[in-house]
Structure formats: C-alpha cells, structure tokens
Length: 431
Image (cartoon, rainbow, N blue to C red):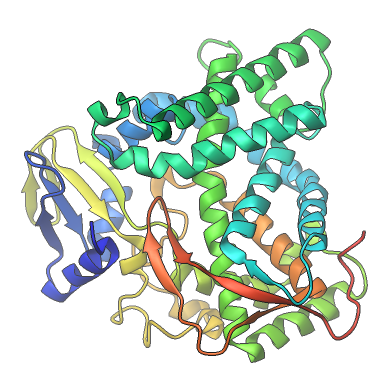
C-alpha cells in the first residue's frame, strides 16, 4: 500500500517467471512476469479464464459492460459496440476533439503555472463526453453530466480497493460517489428516451449505441446497458488518456530536441492548417513519441485474469480460482527487452525488425479482450498533442522532480508546468 509500484517492480529481481503474492487473505494471486507466458495467458488460455476480482468489482460499481464481461456475453457486447469505434466513426470525432483541445488551451493563462494532470483529465473528459453526446444534450445538462462523471472517475479507484462492507458506510465520499453515479444514469437514460422518441440521428456516439443490436436476439441496447458502457468508457478511457497526455507533455518539456522534431514534422505535414483525421497516420515521429510514452509511462499497473478450471500455464499447473496478474508498467521497463529502459527514446521504434517479442509490449492489451478503443485513444492523443504543441510551450521548473503514483492508473503527482507562448503563431488554435 505504501509503494505498490515499487513492490511490483521488485518482483522482477526474483528472475522468476511466476511469483505468488498475497493481496487479500485467502486469495492466491500469481504475478506472471515472462512475456511468453503472458502471451499464452492472453491468447491461448483466454477461453478458460475470466477477468478476475478487480473486474468483478468494477462491474459492481459501474454495471455490466464490454470491459467487465467474459465469455460469450463479452463477444456479443464487443460486436454490438464495434461500429462505434469504426474508422468512419472516429474520423467524424476528430473535429470535436480538436475543438475541445482548442477551447482548453485558450483558457490557459500565459506565464502562469498549470496543473497539467488535472488539465488533461478535464480535457480527456470533455473530448469523450462531446463525442458521446455532441448533439444529444443542452449545455446545462452537459455541464451537470461532466461534473457527475468527474466525481465517479475520481472515486472509482478508491472504491475498487475497498472491501464491499466499506462501501455501505455513510461516509461523505461514499454519498458523493453514489449520488454522482445515480446522476449519470439519470441523465443518460433521459437522453436515450428523448432520442428514441424523436427518431433523430444526432451523429454522436450515443446515436450509434442506440442503433446497436444484439446479434442473437435482435434486441437493441437498453438505457441501463448504454449507461453502463458509457460509465465504463469514461472511467477506463478518460483516466488513461489523461495520464498518457500528461507524461507526453512532461517528456517533451524535458527533451527540447524531441519536441523540435515533432514541431518540424507538424509543419511539414500540416503547413498552416489544423490536424485532421487523415494526418493521424501521416505523423510517424509523433506516433513514435506516443508509443514511447506508452512504454515508459504506461498507465496500467495491474491487469488481472482468473482461472475457472485447472489450468496449465507453461510448466506450471494452477488450480481453479487462481488470480493471475501482470503489470504493463514493469513489463515495459524490462532491460532484457528494452535496452536502457528508463531513457525516453522514440527512435527505438524506428526498426520494425527490433520490435519486442509477443507479450513484451502490451499498450492496449492483447487477445480477445484487447482494448477496442485503441484507435480512438491514439487518435485523441495525436490530435491533442499536435494541437497543443502548435499553440503553446509548456515549461518545467528547473530541477523539478516528478513522482509517479499508482491509483486507478500510473500517473504523475503534482505535475505543474508554466504556459509560454510559441515564438510564432501556429495553426490549430482558433480553427
């Protein structure tokens, strides 16, 4: 509890592929450290595993969703939701994302310190909420929804770690969380009912979810099901995106040469126009910067699975009910797979022939439970970084040391940077 990341990192010193730890009395947890075994766990063994205690608790808190479901229900949910993350849909979201970044940056005061992590949480939440509800909510309702989502997102990490009985205590924290969660459900259910009654397609993700049907029954998603998907998407997507954006801005401020190369690429590819969807794949160096951030500062620190029957993993036989876990943060810093692992080096991704082996680099997971929003998330990141960098320069205080903490995600603690103007006007802000 005092240093969860340090503890997980220390397991690597054992040089053992599997290490058993006790997170809760009576619960056996095996941390898988060998990439080949992680690959086997996520791919070959996936049909015989469920997602484990953390995902059980997430389902209790936010409702049944594609993130928490396993087995056949997961496959059905994934197919229902896949159209919302299709190439054509994401391309429609980029203008919304860019407008939210522009509005956020415009509100920053030049010469003043900025809490970057909090700013990125707010930006990520705005980008997500606007893509989901762009045409479905008026401003007052949208502001209330954003406020409620913020409370849920900030509180879910604590609630995940609490025993079930602690959730029932009449504490102010519990009351705020429960009230905000109920508020989100009420807002989404009202929006669903109004959209269904009007028959309009507002062009946002909510309209897309309303068109989704169960492949076996032909039935559409209910309001409660849509709400659970949106709540889980907000928690799983917003916090992780905010952490990656924060760490990317931090590393660019620490490495002005890398930042200069990103800016030169943006000038070459974009000229004076703002970033568009087609540019996401036309900015290879910026993409390598984001990939390297996902390696060095991956926001996920513990991913779980659980055996449902006696299971053979490598040369070990594990009984049913064994909790399995792996840590992306520790995995991506393994010096055996990533030379000089603590150095931020986007050029390590230049040569496809040097890519790490299966199971060694898992920015979005792998197998049938791989994050279905990976393309959406990368589009958000490229759009946000490209737009912010061309508008302002974020400056670290000299000698500032940033600590990392693991809560719901691995994120920077107290990342404050000063907002400076760019030397010359750049495209992207005000368009």
